[in-house]
Length: 189
Image (cartoon, rainbow, N blue to C red; front, side, top):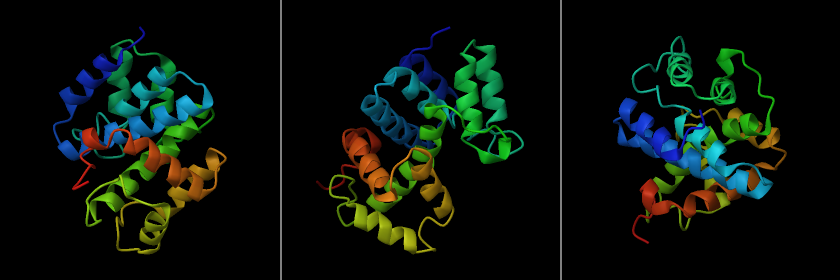
C-alpha cells in the first residue's frame, strides 16, 4: 500500500481529537517536509510519517503502548514497514535505533517543532512569523519554559541531521512559517 496524505490525515483525526496534538502533527509534518524538499527526498512519504508519528498518543500515551499500538494499526492497514520503523525510532525508549535520514529527521523535528510552537505562542504577537532563533535559544535556557521538552533532545536532533543548533532552529521556524495559519501560529501578524 502506498498511503496518501489524505488517508494519513483521516487516520490521525480518527484517533486524535485534541487540537494541540493535531497541530503538533501538522507542525512536525511541515518541518519534515521542509527537510525532504531541501535534501531531494520524497516529500510526500516523509510528510506522511511525520503526520502519523504520534497519531496513537491521545488514546495510548503510556510508553508501554505508544508508539507500539499505532504501529500495529498501521501494519494492519498495510502501511510500508519503513513507516513503522521510522515512527518506532522517534522514541528512544523503543530501542529502535535511528538509521535512515528520515528517521534522524523525524527525531530532530519532533521536539523542535513543539518547542518552536511554544516559543511562538508566548510572544506578544503569538506568531511564528516574527520568531527569531535568538528567542528560541533564550527560551531553551529557561528550565521552567516547556519543561517537558528535553533540551538534550533538541541538541541531539540537530547533531543527528548534521546541523548546528541555530541552523536547525532557523530551518524549523522557516518551514513552520509557510504553514503558520494552519498551525494556528499566525497570531496578530
